[in-house]
Every structure is written in C-alpha cells, then in structure tokens.
Image (tube, rainbow, N blue to C red; front, top):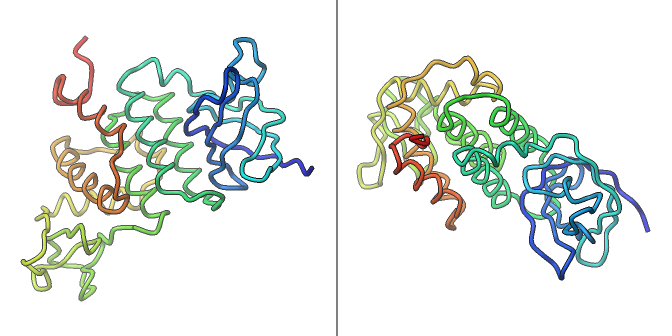
Length: 256
C-alpha cells in the first residue's frame, strides 16, 4: 500500500453508511479525486473538520480499486466562516460546483486550484462585490478548462479595432465587418469589451482595488453565465440560489 500526500479543497461530500462519507477533493498532485473518509461523521472524529466542504486541507491517502481512502488529514485553511453568510455561501457553493463540473477525475490542474484558493480567500477575508468576483472567477476557470473567450481581437479577422459583438457559440468577439447576424450574439459597448480584457489580465487578488461600473458588471454577468451554461451543458444547482437571493433586493445582498 503506497501512501500519497496531497493538499486540496473539499468540493462536496456524501454520506456513506452511518459514520463514513465520501469527499470529492480538488488536489494539487492528483486533480479531482473521491476519497472515502471512515468515521468522518462521528461528532468527535479527528478528521471531521478537515473533510468539510470549503476546507483546504492536507490529506494522506492510498488508492484502492475504485476510490482513494483517507488515512490522515489536517486543516490548512477551513474557510468555514463563508457558510455563516448566506450570500457568500451561495457564491462559494457555485465556485465549488463549477470546479467539480469542469474537471474530470484525476486530471491535474494546479492553475485552476490556485484561482479557486485565491477566490475563497477573497470571500473569506474581504468584503468585495460578489458579482465582480464571480465574473472574474468564471472567466479564469473557463480559460484553464480550455474555453477561454477571445476578447482582445476579432475571432475571424484578428483585427483589434471596431470590436462589437460577442458570440456564445463561437467563443469570442467579432468586429462589425465579420459578424454573422444569422447567429445569436450580444452587442457590447467599448467599455464592456475593455472590462473583459481587464479581467482577462487581472490577478484575482487585485480585485480588491479594481474600479468598475455595477451596471456594466451586471450586463457582462448575464453573458458569462450563458457562456458557462453553453460549455458545461448541465444545470448548475447553486446558481439558482444566487438568483433567488438576488430576487431579494436585486443585488444578491440581504436586506437586513
């Protein structure tokens, strides 16, 4: 039996029997893996806290026929305060679910793991507009999954001027001369295209200092959600919670 040390974020867990559970972890060395955590649901289990969703933990595992089995685990960063804020919980759950959907089992993607960790740190430690985090996160993880939208030049003629129309199906922006009006597209303003290029190049942690127009972010969020939906080809359950919360006051924040 060969033991493997990994670090990763717990994306989800499901109960197994009376005291066990299976956790899905996005790890640094093995990509996304499923781990059987024996006894993790016992109240005084030493591995209970480190195997909760959102936790970034160290895991000592070994591989069985179908699943990995946990021998030891310890918390690096719990991020559990996220679950105390309903809005942050909704957005954080969406981030975890999107990572789960975009990644196949045991395919390493340390860049996407890095974006996830930085995003969770922002959620946990900062008070930044959740929609700007979401928009940037979606752009980054889709890019690392191989679906990066082309926003700095026309996807047909490669020109960098007169850009105006974003196509979900084609995955990028057309100039006025190349757009095919038979396809669905979104007409964008210059400031919206410039902002897409800004989040294309920005580091997640730099969102603390970014300046933006809220209406612009809302418009781009609609497009990015449709782009995500086009590529994942399935319903993202946690996105419904975000939309329900936005129905409270229109901004995804509590009225209290």
